[in-house]
Image (cartoon, rainbow, N blue to C red; front, side):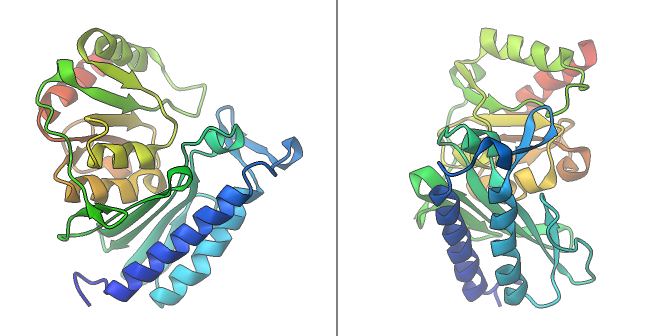
Length: 269
């Protein structure tokens, strides 16, 4: 074992994630309107999400006997006494998938105690597999990646996301967007948090932030950004991004400035 996770576990986890990604790709044009459920106004799910999760869980369970799970679709018992926990989003970017917008992924992380020690995100349509192990660096298709060197907000390309619930107060979100439009180089809303974080990790984006985000959306991306040399915090600069359901992932060059802008927008709105 290395950092608590053997190379065999990592290799097999990556393999099953890719296999499930290929299954999802094969279903791209097969989903019918009657197959789609609406969890919330802007949150959709289909048999593809659930089947993908059902394909992932038994393989990952066999890799680490006694492990527990946190999964988006809840197809497996979530509780467990083991020290290891798999955190699964079987299809991050479901709405994109259902509308055949080619920006969606399979995201799987492994947590040991309170620490994420491994993460893999498979960018299905581009056949890009991002992964990282604690202390070992971050990779895309086995090529080492690193965050951008952009050191000024006015040169930064950022991404964000919006809450699923229509009951969320949108005033601070709008204030933030207004600020970025005036002071950053560009803003994107791409629709898959795991990939947004991976795009920060490989330097395509300079930072990403979002609130009312779930642990399965970001767990794998968080370790990939950190191992690529970036910085991850909650909106207050702490490490409670999972519990607070808010995250900033950046190249680290002007992270405190990003945090300050977000805080100001939320305090004023």
